[in-house]
Length: 241
Image (cartoon, rainbow, N blue to C red; front, side, top):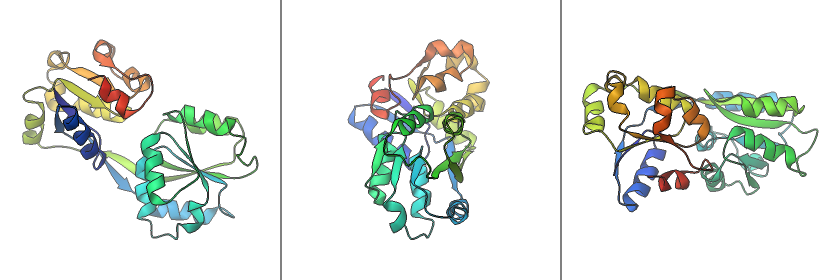
């Protein structure tokens, strides 16, 4: 099948390789790009009176910021790190973190994982290496539980505006499947001129979303074309193709 991959680089290349192994034709059209803000990370670490008791990470992008922030990582690598999923956990492990706990695939489930963990220091400060825009569910749940939470917005996801020729190459012929990894990506995909100008044509697509929450952001008339895995994992997402 012809599968449109909308996730940012470099993750898109990894997805394309997996699709090729499964016998599909990947079409890369990253719709968001990461703008790193290492100064925000450095400032957040400077603002705490001592090292945080643990870290929260909801994207491998945060690990890329940490790797390029010109910091001595050795004190941080000894900390516990709560990762939203396996991909983020692998990125943390590759950077040198050894005390990694994997959450349930989204921010709310990750907050539940942290709150249920009996090794978390009750009075310690937890540092969330966050991106923007993002869902507020993780922070709201932790703050309501009186967790001492600090947030470092260390990267920003920005939309990519492709020229008309690139869009035509990706969308003509129309792909069989579109992979959507975030609510922002879904919104940007639907705003693309070839898509927005022909909403009837888009209903021929299968919209595979990483989670039900992403599917819920789609317009009501497109939700019947959407599907999602039982867990927000890429391997399960690709199994739906």
